[in-house]
Amino acid sequence: MVKRLRKLRKKIRLHSEGTQTLIWGGIGLAILCVLVGWAFGFTSIFFYLLLVLSITLYLVVVNFFRCPIRLFEGDTEGIVVAPCDGKVVVVEEVEENEYFHDRRLMVSIFMSIFNVHANWVPVDGVVKKVEHHDGRYMAAWLPKASTDNERSTVVIETPEGIDILTRQVAGAVARRVVTYTAVEEECFIDEHLGFIKFGSRVDVYLPLGTEVLVKVGQKATGNQTIIAKLPA
Image (tube, rainbow, N blue to C red; front, side, top):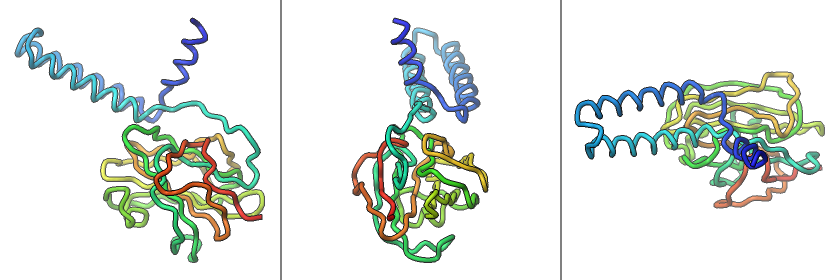
């Protein structure tokens, strides 16, 4: 029984970014339910409908802030892991004009409302750049979201000297992109890169010649799915 409880606690571990949202959201919904109960009666259909809707909404918000403990098993040299849970929506060669100013392979993973919204560091290395950009809040699956939406850019140099750019992109609902890394800081696979509150997608820009191991439509698991192997 104790082992089962420990496993369950790990499965439902919540991210610290959601603490205030969950506390005040829960208080607000509880007050609303009590007021409706007083007004229409605690046995009325209105009260029960609101109670069911409130519990459902609260569980959806809790789902956003799940924070599972994950450790990558295997050699991390030369590999790129998925920075988030979700579905691969883009695998293509693009022009990256913010940092590299040349052609790169972009792998983009979209997070639905049912995915964990924590983001993981995709490669071992040293952080070379961290920059936040204000922007719009278009639907995250649109191509221009990567350049026009609110976003945070992190560039990591691997031990082999290869620069990898990871971009956290907000969406139509997301209103806050949080990034934990700092310039000149060492970072490793298994560590959290950041969090997108109610957020949307993460793009990874890789050098040409990288062997991409995922395809459009494939589901990815943050810090577990190997999305690419870097060129030697």
